[in-house]
Image (tube, rainbow over all chains, first blue to last red; front, side, top):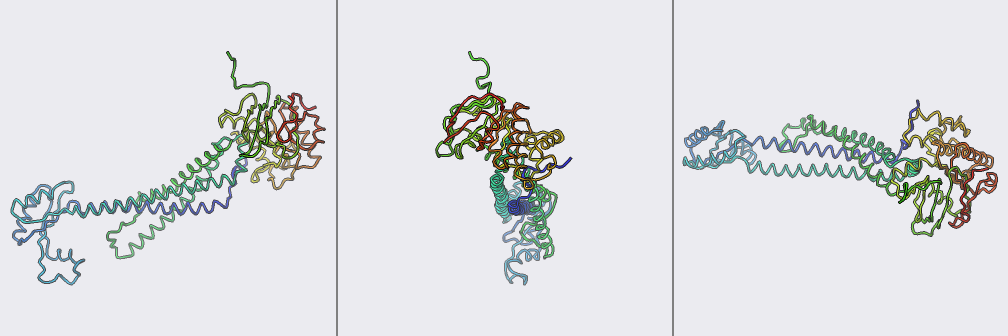
Length: 289
Length: 239
């Protein structure tokens, strides 16, 4: 039995431009989604790093007072470790500000206690502050909450921007496809009219266009996702070829969730194309008798 | 108390009541047309160019709604039918367009089979019938030819096969002999008459060709400036 020829001609040069546009939109959307996820992971990592860490700065204290404070803190339930930071450690912390040449002579150096605690415990820092004050030790307890909060807020904004970009690109793709479907419908008016007068229902005609744009979305989305995959792989290889220090920048990865995003891109593109085609064709046909 | 469905108007294949048509804000193309065609009748429609023949046919094959008045087909008023019901009604109408309107990317066979494909029938079920129909119109050897490989007469016969393939209750042909030589025109008319006699299909043909009309010896309606000059109820088959 011979294969039935599709009722819409298969080759249409106008669709090449649409293919390119959808492909580019899918590439950008996939990249934006991967960036949003990398940012999310980075935020989670940075927050986890500082959670459970408390710094206690002792004011006008000597080494004996520091040991006393350390013992007091170590005895508090939930605290898993407490130690007085060595002079070299404090110098290393200040190195980004003062350079590697060492601190200026005579610069008063605070004594700092590094405290490890159960990250699940809340309000430990105020509790420590209260106990130290009651023991007559002048100190400043910092749970890094301010910094972590700033980071979380900044990353929240970045994430929102990335997600908005994904949504915007998706909406643009749908609008472009709707426009292209309408143009295709006008270009194929002769065929649509013959089908219509042969008794084709609106659904029958719309399914022809839906199928066409589903395939186009799937193909263009796959190519776009492949380009996004290549871009991420390139970014990863460049990052690993560098110093290995990524600083505060989110790092792109290719874990199963990222691969899921890449696989979902063509499916979502095809789905959006199909829905856009359906709505456009049905709406357009409803205007006719 | 009324009995039966008030929307059902029996005993006619086509009925127009006070039908008028205008495109956008232009003058009326058709004005107050009343027309009854009985099932199995054969009618010719003639008139000068621009008289509104094609527009009248468009109303009959449900390509356009009337601006005023009412079109009823097969005992049903069309103005309040759902879109799906209109599609189903169109499947009962075969149309032969003057310009053929074949799909260029399909073969003669696929073009002729189009209404069956649209109706959701399986190719294995309809293939023998379509091939036989194409043989009947003299195209048994051109099944796989695309429209650009066919002559005007051959294309017209494919269009006729497409119009007949689902055994329509109403066949409408708009200048079916306009693009073919006189000999082919006569053959096509004989084909319509045979169809009318053998299957009882109601046939309406619009044509300029008075010689052909005289040969057919069918009742004639004449349109002039959008008015049906002779509006007679015709019921007989072509002689």
